[in-house]
Amino acid sequence: MSQASPVFSPLYRQIKDLILRELASGEWRPGEVIPSEAELALRFNVSQGTVRKAIDEMAAENLLVRRQGKGTFVATHNDPRAFFRFLRIVPNEGGVAVPHSVPLECWRAKAGQEAARLLEIPPGSPIIIVSRLLEFGGRPVVLDEIYLPGETFQGMTLEMLQESQESLYTLFETRFGVRMIRAEERLRAVAADRNSAERLKVGEGAPLLSVERITYTYGDKPVEWRRGLYSTVSHYYLNELS
Image (tube, rainbow, N blue to C red; front, side, top):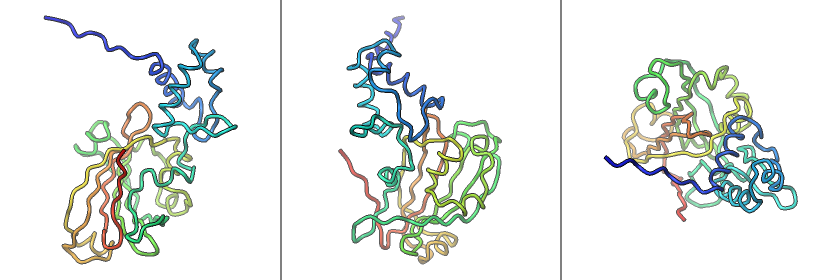
């Protein structure tokens, strides 16, 4: 039986993995400047060109942000330019609309089979479930149910969510040290049940867009399972492909 050949990883990818490891360990926090390319080249014993290629790829993936004349910074959800990276709902008339988050509930539970599988935690592990509305111009548009690993988000309360003036992902980052770096979504059409119809102020049975999201932090670790119901009466889901 033939053995599989080892997978070759280019040197810049190896440097990228080392930088990611430092980010995951908290060596450089969101919003902080990282060492210069020359310093990193010396640290990892490689050329500056190799470091530059690694940083270029990480910047393209929204992990790092280059600022002319200032250096390279760890990307943060607190940056207004990153606010709409994970928010794809747009008003029919176009333009940018900033939503208002209305936390409804926050409770603790034990992970069932589906939550455990998607969050990659043992069944029965503690989880936190958050229910909230996103309103645009006072109109409810999104009803979210969010599942979080309890050990990662210890101390989260409804009062904390209600008092926060930050976006939810900024709160995760600043209060719990968890940065969301990528997400996978699944979309399908559903009919509004009684609860979602009341919350979103649509008729029972009205068409809604169901958006299920798994969000990952460093190391491809899932840290959020979100099920959102979107009213598309005055908004639509926008995804740019390139």
